[in-house]
Length: 223
Ligand code: APR
Image 1 (cartoon, rainbow, N blue to C red):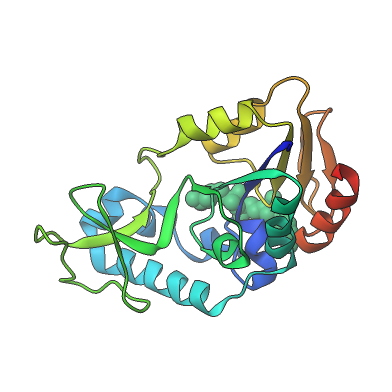
Image 2 (cartoon, rainbow, N blue to C red):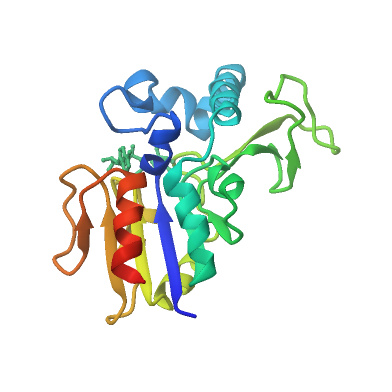
């Protein structure tokens, strides 16, 4: 089976009602990054940061996978599919995809504030004084700006070996993740699904549609 890598960003979850970051009215229009998505913000005001992610987790639980997630999951019938996602939601999992690498963490998990150990979250909230077994405050299992991005080596290897590489719903503005577009081998077929005028290398086929429509078109192009 051909190896297909899907590289997804917030745009794929837009049709599930979850905000993107940099579209008009996106999350970074509503919240200053330095107040809710950095380690310093966590040290300065852990309550504010925890509340920001509690609200996003609630939205994620209430959201449903959309057609783009579902169609991508169905590609596993004909391709060896791995998803490399910048998204912290679990909509790819809930759509039925089975191999998913989260580069920026997973909102449905918590993490000890002094180790990489992760823990399930009962319900939708991490509360002040929710402690890990070693007695330290639990934090969202999310990669904040300036923190190390786990699994980048794994992502690079997977993409370097891909026969087909599909980018969907990312503005490609956040590194090192955005640099993954250059990790493909020369003969790899590359597509990007995004309704906006995103600039892409000339040999990348731009399907200028929203996720659900774009994946439908992609399926006709790669079968
Ligand atoms: N279908 C497909 N793409 C869409 C849709 C849609 N319905 N709606 C918007 N988009 C596109 C936008 O045109 C944009 O290119 O999705 C992209 C969203 O870009 P961002 O909001 O920047 O999200 P993303 O690229 O995932 O951000 C990367 O930045 O803040 C950090 O950690 C955060 O993982 C995130 C990273």
